[in-house]
View (cartoon, rainbow, N blue to C red):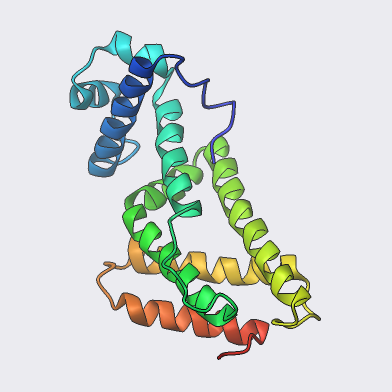
Amino acid sequence: MANSALLRELPATERGQRTRSALISAARAVFEREGYLDTRLIDITKEASCSAGTFYTYFSSKEEIFAAVLELAQEDMMHPGMPHVADEDDPAAIVEASNRAYFEAYRRNAKLMGLLEQVANVDPEFRRLRQERGDAFIRRNARSIASLQSRGLADSDMDPLLASRALSGMISRLAFGHFVIGDGDGDLDALVRTATRLWVNALVIPRS
């Protein structure tokens, strides 16, 4: 999600990396508690129990540390860890496991996703980052759909990229509506079942 315009190179020393990580953790806590617009750098340094000088050693601005916070959230959501699927040849089971892992990761990062949506509406750089995040999911899912098509396990008449754009957008908005706009306390199993059924039916994936 991050790019060179907002993030500098990682510290060379282990101590520097620990300090940077502590600042990011503190910033996340403050952003989620106060919101992006109301967060001040002094709030972050106070949360991290460090000086302003220490902050500026690793980050140049609130925008830069927010990008670093989002980068870690992106990594969690792109690689959330998926439960083992007993039959790896069952594509419907894999879709269900993938959806569950995504929704659980989104739930962990829901406050940040809500903040990103707000900031992207007023900041072109974060609007670009939000688009890059969405494109990364779309490309990954398009590769999965193309793989299923090559194995005769999905409708081969569909353009995999366009299909991915439609289905990934559906899943993303479902997650946003459930965990950011809603209270997020609904039945996760029902959410996973519904999303999986729509995905499987749209691609004409066989069920075992």
